[in-house]
Length: 229
Image 1 (cartoon, helix red, strand yellow):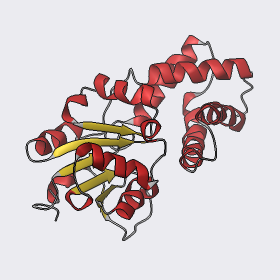
Image 2 (cartoon, rainbow, N blue to C red):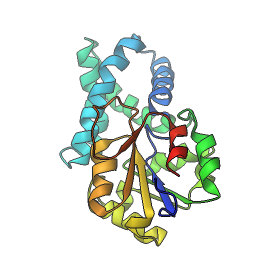
Image 3 (cartoon, rainbow, N blue to C red):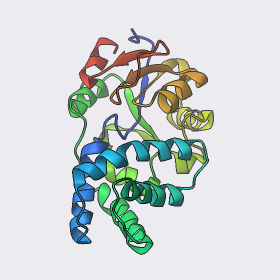
Image 4 (cartoon, one colour):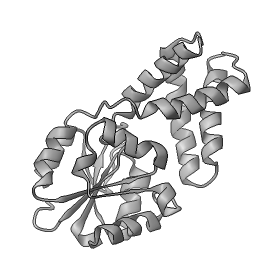
């Protein structure tokens, strides 16, 4: 569908290539043990996952700060499962979570295969809303950093996806045009609608089970990218 048109492929990182859920679970397991915090990890994660999504949406909309996101997602998750944890411990857990998260390198199934498939024919890049101090470490520790020519994060751009400025910065750094660019990401609002508004071609990797839509072509497995490129 995009062959002969696209020269540059831009990926989101978390939930698209880097297996956030699995790596996050391993991180919580590690830091809970370190702090001798007796929490049922499965119940905690059931509460944490939607709360984390909620706060990332607020963060994209500039309604919460990075610091507030990091504290409140833990505070509200512990409250949801009825576990009393004092503020000092929550702040320490928050810091340890960020420090340790990038040390785990599990990737979404098919990541290496699709990057190998694409690298000879397309220039590959990353556009991420993740925090600068962790995103590069994630890519290095998961051994995918070498595939990408440019990496643009929200702190570098001063705005977050879906703000058009972050996509425009990525185009400028890659020295390419929207009509020659494809954005692949898991978040309909941030990745797909944001990129389409700037003129990108888009491919929605629907790893979050969002409802069917007609804003973009949809895939459920990274190997399906081969049908389009």
